[in-house]
Image 1 (cartoon, rainbow, N blue to C red):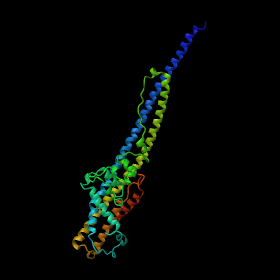
Image 2 (image 1 turned 30 degrees about the vertical axis):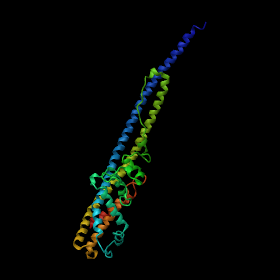
Image 3 (image 1 turned 45 degrees about the vertical axis):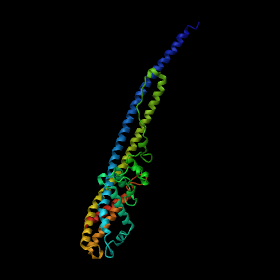
Image 4 (image 1 turned 180 degrees about the vertical axis):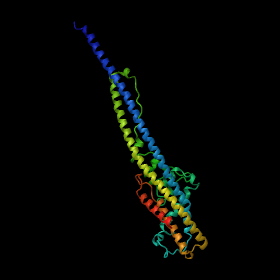
Length: 344
């Protein structure tokens, strides 16, 4: 006799199951909508951080290229002119010149002079078609590396337009920040998020109720949890972007400072090179025929050459792609010498 009640019993179970399915489906749809909103917020945060890094990166890259341009300009003009004329002078006698030790260590037979001479020839080869034709890779390399000691010019393979960073060997391959600034992929270091940032794709909202409420509910809950994880990653990336921005700003400022220093030093350098050429033209190439004032002017010209060499011979970034601490001392020494020149 209980059999007639079975359909009602089963019908009650089916109704309850359906009601739960509908409830789960509604909750799932709500979770999916929330997941989409959270993901959109995460994408906005990540995009803003990425845009900020791109802006800072472009500005810093431009500053380093400007420094590289200034180094090459000096090496191919005033420094080359100094080397050409200074090596003409014969029988240099240093006894009556103040700063005798410094001048003794910088003469046509010294290693420093030979290095500087070679650097001017390398730079001229790189700029064979003019400064405007030098490629971005070469400018970045000159702006970042030692332009004298490293024999950088030999690494620039295509002298007409500069060279892509991938064609540079040795140090270039180890400079993560330079490769990153040059557009290459970054796989190590503090900027790793740039290479592996999570892709915050949109969620596909299927026909929730048609799929089956209970099954879709678990998918929706997972999607919501994933969206929160994406949001946390985006916020972490935003914080990292700030740190990257600070680092790039420091490099940007230092590159500009060194460019300005070289420009100011070159103003005096050109003046004293002109005096040296005038002395050679009037007195010949024998040091003994020069007056004390003329000898002192040539000495100041040598001091300027040494100071400029120190600046272009100092790398902007260290092996980890961070700002080279030595640049701070170079900057202080260079500006201190400028103040001395201003008082002469």
